[in-house]
Length: 84
Image 1 (cartoon, one colour):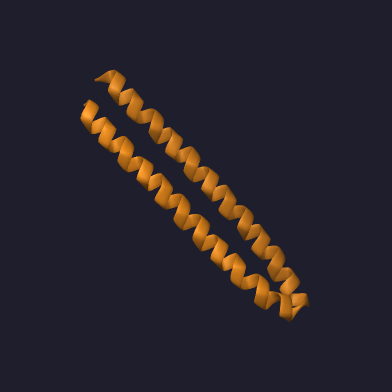
Image 2 (cartoon, one colour):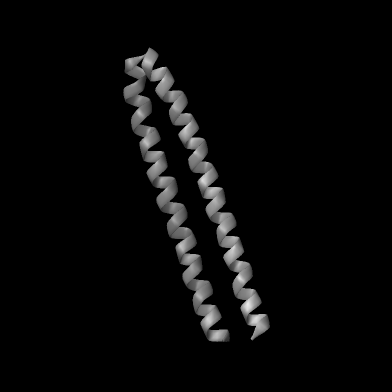
């Protein structure tokens, strides 16, 4: 039981690493968005084109990473249940 429980804790730590990596990417996109916004103040035309992609990147990256981690969580949960 202890060994199985330990294996369940390690993947949980890995999930945190995946989530942190996804969060860092989102943070980088936020910084890019801020840069685009500053440029947008100078060039209204660039703002229109730069604002839309940054919104899309944030949604796509966040949704994909969450779905990926959630799928892995389901697999590990099933394995944990079977081995328990």
